[in-house]
Structure formats: C-alpha cells, structure tokens
Length: 616
Figure 1 (cartoon, helix red, strand yellow):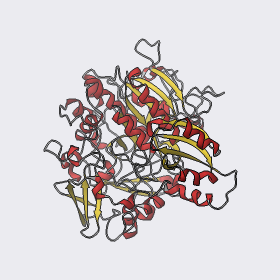
Figure 2 (tube, helix red, strand yellow):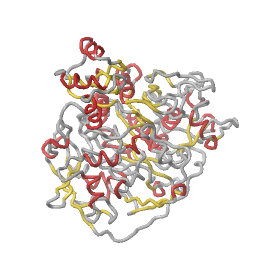
Figure 3 (cartoon, one colour):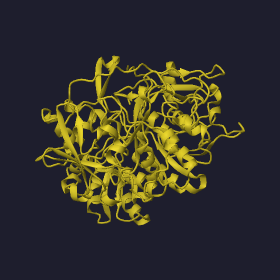
Figure 4 (cartoon, helix red, strand yellow):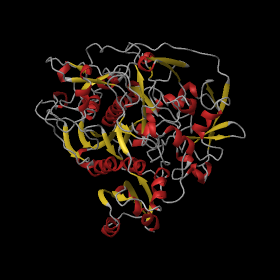
C-alpha cells in the first residue's frame, strides 16, 4: 500500500534451536476510561436471507461503481472510451456468447467458467447491449488488485507442531501473488537438489524475467510470502524458517512487476488451483492481496471464486487488509476489511506485532490491520490474527521492492542479501496458511470448515482492553480495542490446535463466519449465523459448550453482551461514523461503500505489505 506504510517486518519464523530474531518495541497499553456503552450481541437463529432486506443488494445488472459508465453509455460517449469488466452469465458462456460481445468491440482477457463469466475490455457504448442481453445476470468492473503488506513461530507455538513431527510434507500450497523465485536455497527439498516450487503459471500476460536478474517474481512479494509459509532457513542457519518448511509450492502469478493485477487474473489463478488440486495435492490457497468492496459477497465474482475453491476442498486463507488506520468520519478503521476477505467461508487474517519477546502475551494488534464488520454484508471479520510486523523472509533478486527499499535487506549466512523485511496482513496470512498445512499433514481428512473451526477455537484469547501505537511518520497515535471486529477469535496458537481433537461437522459452511445486524429501534446488534445458502442450524458457532460464542471469541463476547469503548464508531454520540459502518437509515450500506472505499483508497488496492513503516 502506498498511502499507509506499515512497519518493517522482522521474520517471526525462528528455528527450533536458535534464538529468535530481534523484535519490535512493545506498544504502550492505555486502559482508558471505563466503558460507557453496552451493545447486546444476541445469538439469532434467523437465516441471512430473512435478516437483510433487498436494498442491501444492488438492483439490476450493473454493479454500483459501474453505473457512472452506464450513464455515459446513454450520452453518446467517445468510441475510444472503454471499460474492463467481468460479465457473469446465467450459464457457462460458450463461443456464441463470446462472439456476441466481441462483435460489440469486446476484447477477451480470461474465460472464468468457474463463476460463469468472461473478463473483457469493452467500449462503454456497448454497455446497454449487455444490459439487454437476457443471458447476462450481472456485470461488474474487473477491479485492480494488489498485495497487502504494512514474531512468529514461537509466538504462535508453531514449534510445538514441529516437535510433534509435522513440517507440511506432502501438502501443496498454491500462492496466488506476484510469483515465486524458485532459485532461493531456502526453497530446496531435503536433498538440496530440487526446488519445492513444483509449478509456475503466469496470469498477468507480462514478462516473468528482467535484466536485473529477476525471475518469476519481479515485485518481490510472492517470494517473501513463500518463505513465510515454507522456507527451510537454509541460508540463515535456521533463523528465518517458515511455518511449514517442507511443503510444496504451486506458483500462480497474478500480480505484475508493480504488485498489481485484476480480479479476473486472480479468479483465473484460483480456477487453475482447483484444476491442479489432485496433481499437486493442493489443500491450501494463500491470497495476500485484496481490494475494496463494491457489492455484497454473493454477487462479487472474486468471492464466488474463493467459495468455489473452498467447496472443492481447498482451505482459502486471505489477508484482512491494511486499512485499519483509515478514519473516515471518525470510523476508527472499522468496516475496512477488503475483498475477498469479506467472504464468510474463507479464513481472514489480521496482523499482530511483537512486544519484544516470544510470548503470545507480548503480541498486540498492528494499527494498520483492517477491522470488520464488512461493507454491505456486515460479516464478522477478521477470523484470526497472526504476527505480521517486521517479518524477515526470502528476498527476490532484481525485484521492485528490493530495489526500492534496499535498507530492508537482511544478510544470510553467506553474507549476501538473502532475506528481506516486510510488514502487513500480507505477512500474517502465510503464517496461517502454513499452520493449515501442518494441521492437514496431521489429519488429511479435515475439511476446510473443520480446519477453520479448530484454528479459531484454539487461539490465544487473553488481551488487554486496549493498546495504542505511535506512528512517527504520521505524527499520530492509534488506539485499538480487542473486540471481535478487531482481533476476531484471537491469535493463532498451534500448540492448542495440534493438541485438539474437537471436530466441527465436515459439511461446507459449518464454520461460516457470522454476520451482525443492527436494530435501530432497540439499539441491539444481533449476531446471525448462516446465510441464503447455509441454514443457521448448520453452522457450528454457539451450538454447544464446545463451540459456544464466548469460547470462540473469548472475553470480548461474554454471555449475551459485548462491551465497547466510548470511541467506537457506533457510539450514539458519533452518528456520522455510525452511518459509515451501518449505512443509511434504509440499511443499504452504500454510504460505507462510498466513504470507506472512495477514490483515495481505491488507488492503493493490491498487495498488503510495506517495507518502511515506523509504527512503535
């Protein structure tokens, strides 16, 4: 992200034997005033379709952010004005449908049959023809996509899984990112003769090499992510070892030399991951990327794609976003989760930072980490937290990030710049993806929902009421509370997860993230399980003592009530901020879309990482 630079990242991954790398400074804790407001959080058994009214969904065939172009299409626009879109059909489009849009001047980019869609660039003047086509169900912008960057193994008790003999062997992890440089020694197999990057494919249509020695990863983000998941620490004597150091990596390159891509490129990569699932035993997809939310998840083709992967038996782990410092109308960073992390199926990961020790008690929320609830649908996110600040992982020679931030290099045991420091939810996400690989090595029969439920239940949940962070380059303090919209179910704890034998039902949607709805007449915020396709009684949360609400979300949810700080955006004294999160009086949520995801934020969509933040 360019607008909100995140702290440096020093790799939380440590060897089993060696001391941990240096951590950042602990944030001072501010307990603040006694809270003045209670909002009741009631467990409801009402299905999603019965709670949300129809205005919450866009009406017609065009997404709201495409409407200005639709308006221009009726005003004799220039024949040269085009727009890049994803066209969803009622059935898988065939050559007849493709030919029809091509005759309108459309240029085909991707066939996205997984979501009944094609991606193309089309003249604005042709939009009315799309609207009139009875076979087309919805048209949205093919949004730009970027990475999400802004300690670890010991703080998350990964060493307990290693001691139990689990290292990710046999598990395939698909990394959909800027590519993975397979020449790094930390990605070799145990014989040190073959790379564990077993497959490459590019979906950007841009060069995969450059004159500076870059190969496959020309931005430097995907290789860093790969090291957090599966680096073996070879070039650091084990100091910078990944979470699952023996996994196989499938490189699906969807971001270019600048860390940018499109919805359709990411969807095409997800589609390929599903196709290759049985070939490389792909059980995990890592998405350290995202963009703003412009429609509800049910209509968003990017969200439809991650749901398809989930239903195909692949655990999808997604970055929450780095917009936690966005204070639109005093919203204090709430409502800033990015897509596809807004989808209730996937595991959405927020970022923590170390307090100078390897104890989970020293981890505090990174101020840049995005908070829920999600725009439009008000899904409770993030699901889980992991260390993401100052993470040292693999460098990619000749890549953009390395050339832009040479001070972030970290030398290996050969004296060369083998490692690089980054921060962000992009770095927290692969920590969880690696943890998923360890769980699946332990028990290959686990379904995605069972993995999600076990990780969320077994998190570290003991947090202070609030902490604050000073960010020198912004000359500003940021206060974070530890509610379920800020830290989800808590900090990843692999010792608990590996030791647990609790099993959620294996059915798809059993661990669907709940949503919340606000009743303006009673002032009650209600927690709702299920959605239009998953019945509330099929979701595990709150169904027993084992999966009780307070068991999953810790002390932030105690019985039927949750305590909020006076600075929270839904305080009755902050009506403007309240409307940003909960939408207008009609409940459409469109104000949040226009304020949170306005033009100033849209320009920073993409990879969620940063190499130069100074958060303290």
